[in-house]
Length: 587
Ligand code: GTP
Ligand code: SPV
Ligand code: MN
Image 1 (spheres, rainbow, N blue to C red):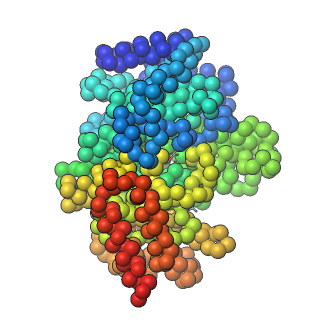
Image 2: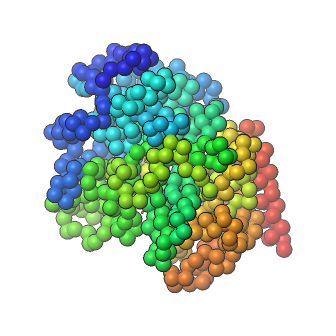
Image 3: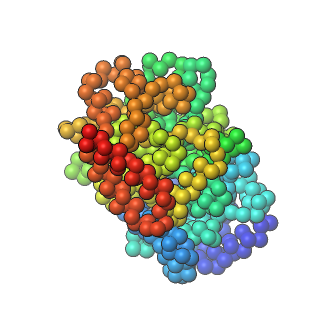
């Protein structure tokens, strides 16, 4: 492969001059190329061959133990003006960041191959798709990008036709956490990532391009790049309602996207369009249309079983790269929460014989990389250039207390407030404390490429673009009882909540107005066969005014970080809800 795009050929030459690779290899994404890379990685230990009889074309990668998750504290947005990055991002001046990164990259590919990976985010032929090129010295990254994106000649053709692409430069360096940075230059459509080989830090098409850079572009161009799954809910008459849902990392997007309805939902089907990222554009009819920019799933392994996510289990097991899972003596991947008994012997994610004292056998953020095309519920519309029309946007997170199972925003403005006010318990998807409640607006705290205040204003502006916008919901599958047990069964049973949302979109079910939004009327969420104690459902749908009042104070404090840039509409929503809660307490 070569290119007629001068900007691209110049950039490749510059990078080669800086990094000094032994050789340069263009990547076309072909099977032959992948076989060659796999062979190389097996030979040098980057990949371990899994049991090819039970798991054909499956491999295990063990990352450096210090490199197992995204590193938010080392991730920067480098805009010319600090305020454009906002309090939600770490910021560095572009010149300083370039100098720092170029010093790290200098000579770093000596003795290595430099891979040039052209990729397309989004369906071929879609006006919403965008291209990028990742230059990397990691064959593991190439093999993952091949699954996660549309990679190769057609992507290059898109670049040559449109003349524009996102530049992503990546090196694993020496994996030293002190020399690890993920830098974004949204004004230059450029990413520089050094010192990590892991997921969102290294597969630059994913969070770096499709969320941080894309969200910045989307603002100036009038669309949205979101941390959302996309799914279709087909009813027994064959009518499909599409929804998109934003939950923070490791909070249930992949699982909801592949939901298998309970047996009693005869004739209902859920179709998977995407499990992590959605690009949303206003279509000709004023509706929001969603495309999934990705082509594969980089999903959380622990907790995945035929009971919780049968469609995911059916997707895995062939042509899959597993990262940091455990392995059985006969070479099968294993993780906590998988079906069946724990095998007596296991090799843990660090390659040691498993010992309970060393913690879980699979890393809590161990993952699988697999093509979406292998998913039995992959939607026939997933490659539609125009995307799918979205009827509802759903936000949520992990909240052991407070947030009810589901509620509906009163209108778009209240919906934007509800999403901006989201908080969730932190997970193993990022390095740092787990289980701590933090604000995570739109599930985008780690991923918004610009000032959240401007982002909320952008969200609010859609009300001027269209009077045909989706309804907005908030859900919480993670409410716990006093004993620390989840009150809601979750997984397939989340269909009961989706059904209520579909009914609301069609205007066929009642709701109860509360200060925080509309809740299902008694009996409106169908839990008949769950044999659930009525008091549990009451608790799941309760809105405690004193707890919510305290929450409003937290939200206000959080919003205050954004000063004068905070949209008035959000302040007005905060005041309205607070006033209504106070009136309720007084009554
Ligand atoms: P990222 O890929 O990090 O963006 O995560 P995600 O939002 O796709 O999360 P995922 O669906 O992989 O779920 C993460 C963890 O939450 C897994 O261990 C799941 O088993 C668990 N989980 C998902 N859905 C539910 C649910 O409805 N209830 C409960 N209790 N756990 C769930
Ligand atoms: C997330 O952390 O939200 C992920 C995994 O989806 S990563 O690709 O590492 O960002
Ligand atoms: Mn994610």
